[in-house]
Length: 116
Image (cartoon, rainbow, N blue to C red):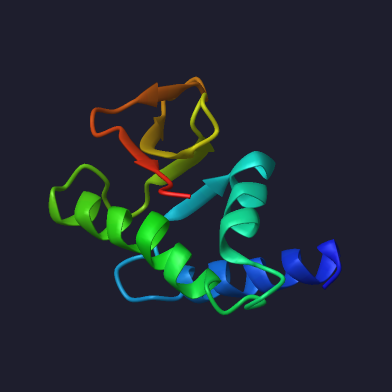
């Protein structure tokens, strides 16, 4: 499977995630490293892209749902999703834009590490 096809599959899954009730009004800000990490652990030569749905659920949907329930993030928020410094998981944190356009971090940082 080509790298371009892998990105297309990931983006389809991310659009599906964004279309879920409760997440529609969030803006998900995934950088390239986070996307590459999701592809690396969610797509394999043996199983193709089948594991990607579970990876998205485990590392994005479940933590985002928890953050919404705990009111760490709210409708209209931008959620910043980055690869951890050790490159073994994702960091999910809400951010709000100040009137000057700078990001103000909000408590509720989540570190989600891979078991791979």
